[in-house]
Amino acid sequence: MIEILYFAWLRERIGIPRETWTTEAKTVNDLVDELRAREERYVMAFEDTTSLRVALDQELAEFDAPLEGVREVAFFPPMTGG
Amino acid sequence: MRVSLQSEPFDPGTELTAFSTATQGVGAIVSFSGIVRDTDGTLEAMEIEHYPGMTERALQSHAQKAVQKFGLSGVLIIHRYGRLTPGEPIMMVATSAPHRQAAFEGADFLMDFLKSRAPFWKKEHRADGADWVDAKTTDEAALDRWT
Image (cartoon, rainbow over all chains, first blue to last red; front, side, top):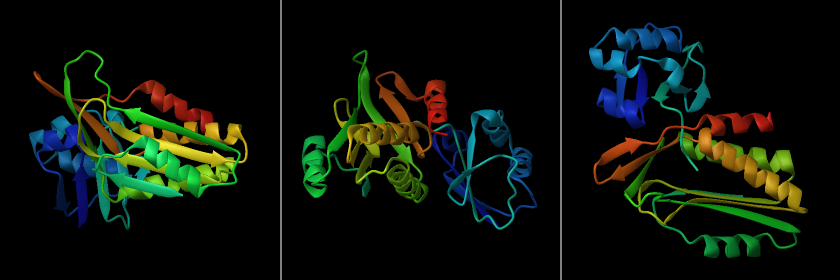
């Protein structure tokens, strides 16, 4: 079981800020595929992962990163702070 | 080193004075303040979302990185979240060092990081709707200067 968090327009597109999900995924890319297979809103949200960022346990990571031992995955668009 | 993530407004002048007083004995202090701008007179508010938990960690770790990389004597980062109106300060960075070059570079480094590596997202609210601000490729490219 992992916690999945969504921010900014990704949160709006999916319609929830976070959810708990039981996953078989080995990598972030696998997890995205699992989510896309659930519902159309996930397909829309994850249409182009090159325009998205991911953090594993609150550290920025790549989409091919392994999920082993990870408790919290966050997806969001490129950051616009400052 | 002080890092503050807050929804409350702040006064950059007051903060800079406090930072300067706390870091006496250094030769140089640089500060930068970012203000909500309304370029065409239609912006009602700027909403800033962040990732509670990760934001604090990211700000702390980059403040430490800046201290080590540039030999800074002190760092101040204040960043707001929530709903802000035009003219309000969004954030500020201040650095102190024995000499000006380190203070300037440290502040520049922290700004590049805050723009594209700290988990903040801006949304502009206007009379005709709201839009998320797109990240600039120039901001992403600016980070390459420091690697």
